Length: 118
Image (cartoon, rainbow, N blue to C red; front, side, top):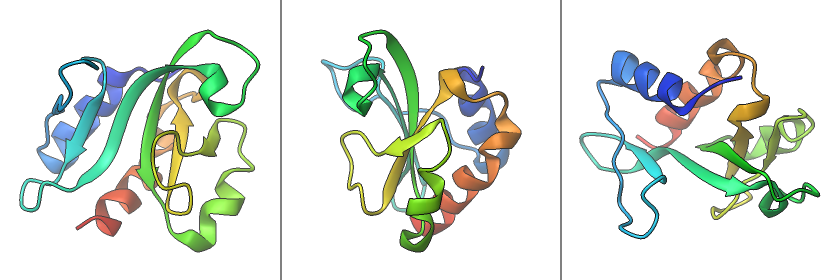
């Protein structure tokens, strides 16, 4: 199970980026932004599973990343990837960190999101 700190450590190591907390009312929502243009390449939130269509109100951590449109459909076939919560569902996906075994499972998705938002 991945933890948000794993994502934060990876973003710091790979992109020299620290999480940014843009909403006063949602202190657990952390954006990962490019330094040069401040565009998000990742957004970590804690939400209830029902927000993703899962029949549960258990709180989970998710990571939203941007993906190529041509891969969105096949990505959503993975058990831990869903249409993006609170983002454009044509361009973004939500990855349930609680269901993801380790960083290697999503490292390429984070890198692609970084490239797509440059």
